Image (cartoon, rainbow, N blue to C red; front, side, top):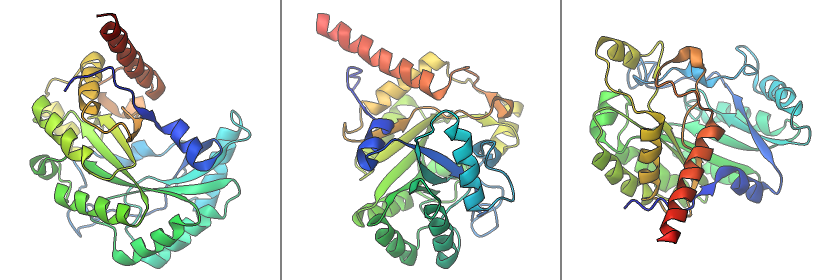
Length: 304
């Protein structure tokens, strides 16, 4: 399939439909760990991961959840004075603690004025039944989106990048969460050098079968301070150009259901952390290129 004339549902308008107001995510570092770093599953974490690239300037070490959210509100209020906010628990694994502690963190966030919901980023192997019970209840009284890092549908890839979980576990966690009526997001990385175009199209077909509400795609980035950066510096491999990556994204999303909300196509890490690729494009600029390429293809098709 290669129908680039398709449309896709964008995250911003969908979110406004869900909430009835415009809302901005504020990243929160809750000081939680990761079972793939503390020895529970492994050490060193995923070979591509550097959590320092996740934290914006207002997300400062040592501040509590409320303080980070208030700082984030001040950061965004200069440009968007009437905006509402979602507390985005992003760095590390945000369901990896005792349920009582997690409840306290989430409820602290929801008590902050103008915070109208939560986005919780986590791993598929860190969703215990008692926490899911609480999240089901929470979902009835506020906006809630649980994002799972899937990263790849290839078991070989998940092993090679030291992910510490399988695609089968990701599928099972997504099914369990969606069955509770909770919105579920997924995260996929495109561009592992050993994954072929055909591999990724097969992966897209698998992702299309999952009960996901939203999906984030982003390019493989070689980030300083990671095991993958060391591997790349020793034996560099070809990285895609922006144009090549755009074609890959368009091919990939052509396999996805039109009901799926596509939140983003690239990751925008601080440039001082990025070894490759260096495209010089911001997220919104890349989304514009995707949209324009779709429109161009559609117009060419209509004139035939």
